[in-house]
Length: 294
Image 1 (cartoon, rainbow, N blue to C red):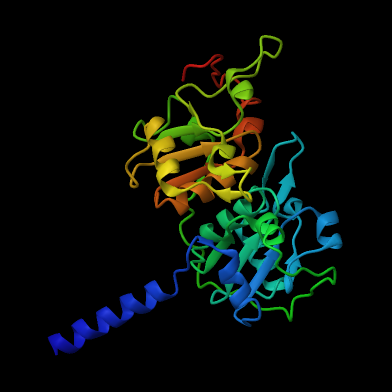
Image 2: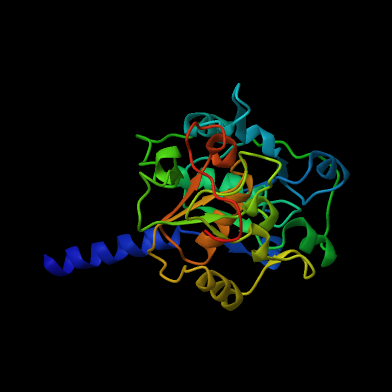
């Protein structure tokens, strides 16, 4: 009986691992799986770009669809319930392997990747290098729009714990987890702030690591090699893959791409402060720091 139980557990674990897809997939991998009916390919490039040409079988999904604008101009996620509805319209079920790409180093794709992670959708990957690498390699494209094959009912028995989302309380200095590394992924200029803008600078204690440090823009828009990224992240104090991390930018856009980067490097406890500086800067009494130092 014990032997049978042990065999069942091993089989279960193997099956679960088999359904956990690679975070980043190569253009060659996609080319060999392009007609796989169990894959939904999503293009998050600029809408005009999609009309010019895109990868075969790719459904176009504009970035702005994933966000809502509040009256105070803070942009936030449309919420997991609406993401579930959207996935159904795209023909995605919990068993579907979703592959996402854009033409800007994962900046748009990272947002959808993060949203799917919030649903514990393990079968999701991003095309390394995206449309840029695909084109530079001479792989075929089309201008014919692709429509989802049919609606699905994306069913979850219940929403999982929202463990990849950070809120305002999580980043305020007085209430923040002191073990969490807060990373500002904006530009150095935004991080340092301006003497002309009173509510500028960065959240006290945040270290600077711009999202675009991860991308080789002069080499097919690929993610930089793991050893280089590991060295960069170690330089800001991020070495342990279990360490709690909170990412923010101006609107959560770049932070979601940085989330993709960290997850691709094996970091497990990563959150995105969705409201980012748009929300933080209009919060009364929320302290800001100017200059190069955290």
